[in-house]
Image 1 (tube, rainbow, N blue to C red):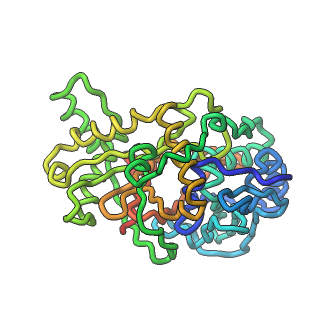
Image 2 (cartoon, helix red, strand yellow):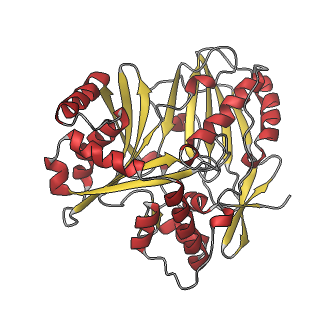
Length: 388
């Protein structure tokens, strides 16, 4: 089988600082490793690309090379009991998306009080939707339930890509077209050195900001995510930004399945764009949460089929001009004055149900400096922030 070429957006998640998607799910009952392993093989027939390695096709191109045993499934017969305040690193070592390395790893840890199933998959292979689509299909196959097969058609953007030798891709153009930042080479992060801060935001707090803004601006509708992102931008970015740079930035990933009509809703791969907005530090400190939330809303709303194609074209030309290693110079958020906020509250955690009851808790991990993950929580949300 020939290697499958990466799409332009997938190159961002290769090399140093490639930020895999990593979760650990806790079950009160002990899961049967033989049963899981048997149905994992069945599921990988539907999701074959997950059993692959990253290989170089040419000097300008990477590909996913299928290997039957590239995805590893390890079983630990004893391990630490699950604690929602602990680290996912107790249960799995995150994947690195580098040449010739496997791109997916799963571990099952049997504890005294149940099982912890952890998965780390290259972000070049999957985004949040595909990560959970794979795991929920595996769970459904284990329960002998019907599931939605993934779409393996990766050609949606192919006919839009072009190479213009007269078009020089600058840092400014990368930011304008893709919402990403060109800078120094990303550092390889030691997961154990990442300092994370947890914050709970109550539904009451979110509703208070929404109502306060609505009284003054009755014709503008904001979402909970707009408010939460604005709160994080206003609180955290001033803590670490370089005061000699007047602008601050916020970046939000957007699922292209929701905005690009030709793209299948069950597309298997990394199908995201980045909505980035900016505001001067002084204005960030002076504006209300509602006013900042409008800036977030407008940035996310600006992502559509046209802007997604423009981003793909820009990144494709950048690759052809500079080679795939140049993507290690692209950052998901501004390295000094920015933050990237990912909303994980819609992820179907309870669908990762192998025996009739879903997980009773879960952990996630992000090594993006200045990255924040919004997680579902009772009576509000919990935010996990990776401090620079």
